[in-house]
Amino acid sequence: MQRAVRATRLGILLVAAAAAGCQSMDEDMVQTTQPERMPALNVVDITAADRANHQPMMAEDVDSFGALGQPPLYSSVQGAYKGRPLTKHVGDYVKALTQDLIANMEYVTNKTPVGVTHFALLDSDLQQTNLLGQQMAESFVHELHKFRIPVIDYKATDFIRITEEGDFVLTRDYLELDAGLPMEYVLTGTMAKHQGGVMVNARIIGIQSRAVVASAQMLIPFYVADALIPSDGSERGGMRDGVKLSRG
Image (tube, rainbow, N blue to C red; front, side, top):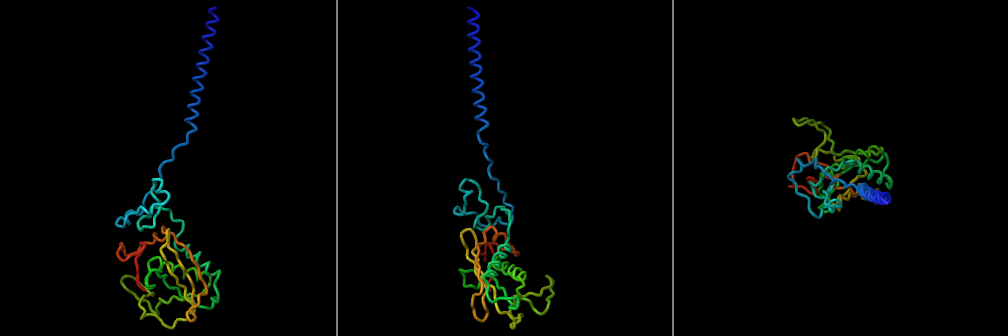
């Protein structure tokens, strides 16, 4: 009789131990199957020192990251560039624009010289540009030359000016320029601020006919355009979209 009672008690203990082991195993499985919490996105503003005096980011410029409580990578507001790695620059977008121009170009050959002007702000009197419009013109000179299209740099003079600041052959004084340059076509265009970037409209026009013989269009993101920094260190005064205005 005592043996039977002991066997019964032993069986109860074994069942209780097995139940406790199963509960512990279930808790371990729950703990191991729970997904790890992702750390918060840590974005460092590597340009904070240069942009300390610029306007802060507006609420309407917060992107999908901001909606989740995370700081956005970039914004359309000048000074909101947040260290996004620049895998492309303005020259890369000009290269794509040039390829598009070449694809639908008419009449322009390796025997028809082309001039390149700065790109004008579309919502101005077309006599204003900025650093982006100036840099795109420089990049187009390079890209057209790569396609063996003769480019005339009409800002070049027939002398070298030697000064304390350096030696220069280019000028913006129209009185020092040659009015008889053999240009048959000119590459020009406009820029318009767009949600997320700057819409660039490029075209090649005949000097005499005014006919458009090639055209291209592309959106340059704000974080690419904002990467251009004026060399004079000017702030918001006389600037639009983060780059200094200059009148033609």
